[in-house]
Image (spheres, rainbow, N blue to C red):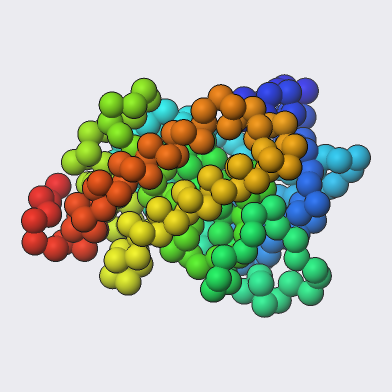
Length: 264
């Protein structure tokens, strides 16, 4: 077996055309959802294969995963547009599961009202499989949960723009380019004006919910989250919240073409 790189060292392995990952109480629900996606014609997600002894086994999605937006392919505008279009196709396929699934549903993250669709919950470059400058697959569905689609869109825009202080290590783009990228992602997704007007505040709410979740898990004794908080990972989101707040109006103008926005 080959260990796969990611946030959980030593816990995710490739075994031929399969991937073995830790399972949680929510995994049976996630597997039913993944089957729903297949029935809806969405083949860009893993196929669930089995649950055994605390592990889930899913099909391997062939391609490249790179979270570094400074990478010429991952950070390209072509990739950005492709990722936005992929998220929209995923959302379209996700519709109907909440109403038609006959079993009790359990999720890792708390549902968000209104429960319109099942959101991925972590649609970031590190969870998108690519080929060249095209996004071709989505992996790691542990964080999926019911919410309005714009809740998922908000986190995706935050990660793909990315909306982070340019002076921070690893941030590939300045503020103006981040705003252009946020607009391009929304255009490729097909976001309507109502979605765009909600996005700046929704991004803030989404990051606030993530911080609350991390702290709650750490306080509950979850070693992985406690280590993340201790290492200062939560501080990154706090700084990003300040940065997004400072640039809220600029972001809104960029998304909806209000006066004062400089086109790309």
